[in-house]
Image (cartoon, rainbow, N blue to C red):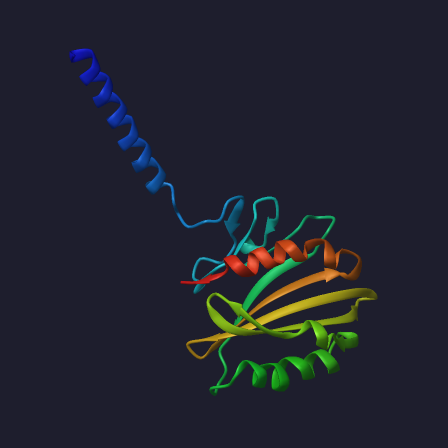
Length: 178
């Protein structure tokens, strides 16, 4: 009887330790990802563990590798007036893309539309262009929170763009505001 009681107590103790260990290890970080948001950012940006962080450069983002420079970054814009995502895109982003260093700029309308970023309503804009002689593709997802505009940008050479769309979707789904 004493052996059975000892075994039961041992099993219960092991179960209690297992439950404690599991609950303590839940840090909210998705499996096989890590946070590359800069320390004072108001968001968490999780990317695959094998991507190279740009955090040390003061950029919330990461690139796939040194060979494949496809990357995801998040930037924050604090406008001097209240504006919608659409106003930000039409008044600031679009003119600078069409008249700036991006050559052959073309919006891919059928890939643009409503989405969500960090639980906030957002707009997705997809476009192609030439940058420094390279054919590039971009996806920008823009959301407004507390009068600030947050832009998650995926950038890749056209040859690599579709290779990472599933991963970028996972990054978008796991993005969260603090």
